[in-house]
Amino acid sequence: MNKEKLKQFGLIGFPLNNNFSVNYFTKKFEENGLPYAYDNYPLSDIASLSAFIQNTPNLSGLNVTKPYKTAVIPYLDELAISAKKCGAVNCIQFTSTGKKIGHNTDIFGFQHSLLNFLGSNQNINAMVFGNGGAAMAVIDVLNTLQLDYIQVIRGEVNHNKQLNYQQLAATHYQHYQLLINSTSVGMFPHEKECLNLDFAEIGSNHYCYDLIYLPEKTLFLEKAAAQGAKIKNGLEMLHLQADAAYNIWMNSES
Image (cartoon, rainbow, N blue to C red; front, side, top):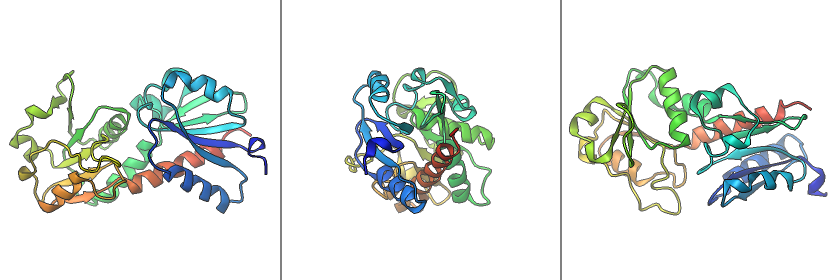
């Protein structure tokens, strides 16, 4: 079968170190009897996106990963409410009229996964590590759930909801008991890297969530678990956001 005659979907980002999306969507298309194709498209420069789209026949949808979740926005025609809310895009819908609409399904995936993790303990304050596109989705969810948070970043602090790692103190670990890693620190193939935290201040009253799913347990989660903390990786979120992207594509204008 000639792939160029099929609807084509894929993932853009750089680098692309795994095949989760390829395997997941290929299987989903097969299970639903859809003759569609899905591939990884590592773009070393977001400026090449327009030419890539023009030169990719029958492109019908894209997922977007690091480092382009915010950088992709100027290349789109519209933003759905989800993307407008957090200022980041992880899913692009191509309409029959040629419009490229940016969505954020990370919000849906993270919110449902987080609530499953917290159970009935949903009155909790959060520390969010990172300030990229994934962090924006996380913070949007925390605002929706009305959970107090502080954002820990490596660069210059821009407002009173941010601090850097050098400013972290014991009082922060006491007040913010939900710790969320939205960075790539510890992700394959850099599994030996770890967030620069005082793990002695983490205990059984902490919930530690890592958006990374490969490896299954990052050093952050390993060290937190050793202190008695409850831990969760990003695999459930990944599945939920992927299913939400699939539904957007399948419900696009025909």
